[in-house]
Image (cartoon, rainbow, N blue to C red; front, side, top):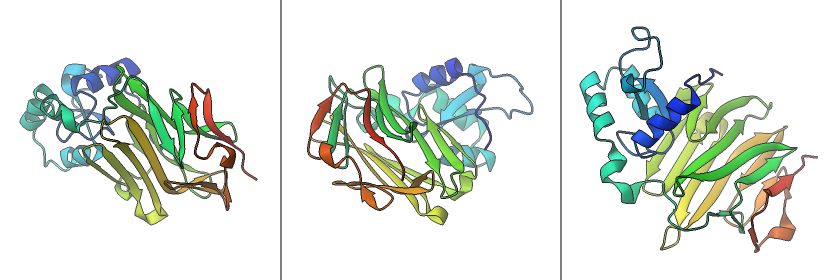
Length: 239
């Protein structure tokens, strides 16, 4: 899988510049690209870079987006004028629902065999940042979201859709789906749903009411509870 070599401080600068969403559509899953092709400009200059979603990255690569349109989006990012649609958690505390277990102010949501699979945190006390590791059944790491930055082994196999407060990630060839929704009337709870994910050869499935690792429901003792300030939400072990 290609490594994302854009320096972290530049990623953060570009992410803030677009209010933590694709400069063109507001999707929170981002790639950091060069407005002028990288073969022509070889250094990471923020003024020549922009944060966009994988879909608009592909459109740039297919020459469906001009340099002028990218520079206009850089100067007038989507979320600047559509803040109500952005991936923002509007509450003093961060609450995450996973399989009918609610964790408050806990970023490491799901750990399997001492490896972080899903983490959720906030930037500037409002913008949701995701860390997610996608493995296949052979335990190959095939895609990563790190602080909303997307890296995938085969990007064309993935579909990433965003509508206000609802992110969907799919890989139909591997039957993987992952959803993140910001729910409740006051936009104050993050809900996670997943299917077709793996770690160490065990399947991982998250529904609204259950979490399965392999054939077994896990963390049953936490079901229906609200837990606060945990270091790890769910710490599971494969059989």
